[in-house]
Each structure stands twice: as structure tokens, then as C-alpha cells.
Length: 385
Image (tube, rainbow, N blue to C red):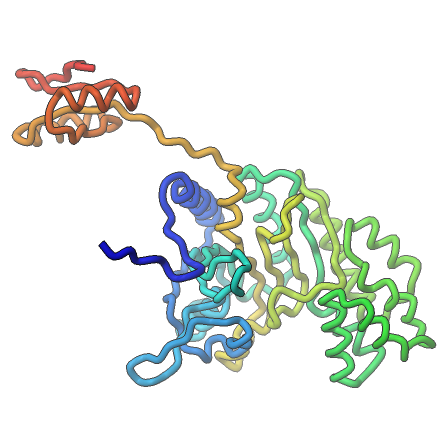
């Protein structure tokens, strides 16, 4: 028989991992439904224009033509399909949504990453208040507790901070782009060369330490107290500090800051957050504010806050113990099916033995270390282990 392999970057899921994944998703959905989030499921295929904010070639997306020769893609993101959904459906806002689904990105060869990933997430659309960010921070804390995550680190930032600093020192967009790229990539030789021209500027002491402005909230704040920030950047940092002070009061988490990292996506417009665990480089939760969410789909913009949850990474952590519950077996003959149905109403924990004869059924029960029952002539259960 010819062996058919899976496409690169994909996998079958079964057994313990599949069971754990179902449990993780179930716990998340229970929490979100209890908090009155509406579930939205969008299709795997979307028109290319939905992801106009993405460089689809750089993201290495799956693209194909539909029957009208229009380009469609396997969704590489789950937030923008929600924006498309909102523009196509006249839903009353504000509204809280959640989703669970797969997205697809072709991973680099030999990276060890999968091309098909499962993500859950929430979108709070129409909420301009900082209480929406607080809701996300609280959700992170509650879900971390439900999923038995220990030593989590909540890293705060702001999508506006880098642009605010650069706008205060130069109007040269090409230069700003180069500095930003070197900063995000932590390419210190290039970054230091680019900022030399601002040696006489009062913000230079800050520029020198900027690439290293990440770590605990206390440590970063102490470094910033020694330098001068541009006015706009100072105001943004004050807002981050306020959220950090609120989040620090939640149990079982450490608050971190990173003022030199890129936002999760280009459409973010305010506070950003990522959640890590010690000794894990990838983040479990990621999100923030993006008030430009609907700009590609309608003229009226809506404030929005949301976050994505990496289901596969949570499953790989194995923080949830999922065991097969053993069930006692019932041996039966096909003509007893109606009686079996009645027995199952009374004893739903029983499982049918599909062995051909009683001897094989008894052996299977011994191997599974469970009891074996059969129906006697009176239609009653008889232990024949």
C-alpha cells in the first residue's frame, strides 16, 4: 500500500494531546461564555483584501484562486476576519466577541514550527474606555488560574511610544524607519550609528539606553527617572505606568515593561501586552488596543481592544492533567439492544464491550483492569469479570 505523508508543517492530533487540547479550549470557552462574550466563527478562506494590512508574501500565506479567478487566502490572522464580519453585519455596538479557530502561515524550513496553528481570542469592539484593557488584564489572570499557569509575566508596552519618540527628534520618515528597524531587531551597531546625529539633543541619554529598556516594571521605571523623555512619550509612559499599577494588584503574576519592541501587528494604536512564562520564549497571550480595526472596511471607525491566545503552546505546556476515565464494560448480544438502552439510562457510566464472545470480553476487561457485566435471562446485570 502506498504511504501518503502529510504536507510539511502539518500534523495529526490524537490521544492525550487531542484530549488536552479539547480541555484547554473548553475551559477558555466556559470562562468567556460566563462573561457574556458572543462566539463568532469565520471561514478558513477569506479574500486577499481582508488582509490589506499584511505583507502576504512576507508572511508566506497560502493563496489560491476561486472560480471567479479572485485571490483567496487561508486566513493568517483571526482579528481582521472579525473586522470584516462586523462591517458585513449590522450588529449593535459595543459588543464583546470571542473566537476559536485555526490560522495558517508557512513557517521557514527547518524552523520546527507548524503551518497550521490554533488560536482563541477576544474582541471588545466599541469600548473606548480603559476599562476594556482592564477586562483583558483580568481575563489573563483568571484564565491563567483556570489553566494552572504559574510564574506568568505580563509584559506591557504601547504601540505609540516608539513613533512618539522618533517624531520628536526627526521628520525624516526614512531615517525613522531605519532607527525603528534597528531598535526592534536589537541591532545595536546599526542603531548606535543612526542616533549619533542626535548627540546634542536633550533626548540623547534616553536614546542610548532605549534598546535595553525592558525588564521588571521597577527596574525600567528607575532607568527612565534618570533621563529626559519627549513630552508625548512621557504622557504615553504615564498611561502605561497607570495600567502597570493596576495589574500589579492582581495575584500570581509579575509585571514587566518593554519600550523597545514592535507591537503585535501594525494596526495597534495603544496599550499592548504579551504574557510569558519563565523559560518559554514564545508568548501565551498577546493583545492590546487597536482603534483603527475597521479602517479597511468602513468609514466609521470603532474603538477596540482584544487579545489572542496560543492554544497549541498552552497544550504543549502540559499544565492540565487529563486522564482517561476507566469505565466498566457490558457484554451483550445484538438482540438485547433495546434492553441495553434501558440499562444505559440507569448506568450511563457503562461502556459496551464489542468483543465477539464472552471469553475475549473477559480478557479485555482484565487487561483494562475494569469489571465486566452481562445481561442475565431476567435482563439484570451480572458480574462476569
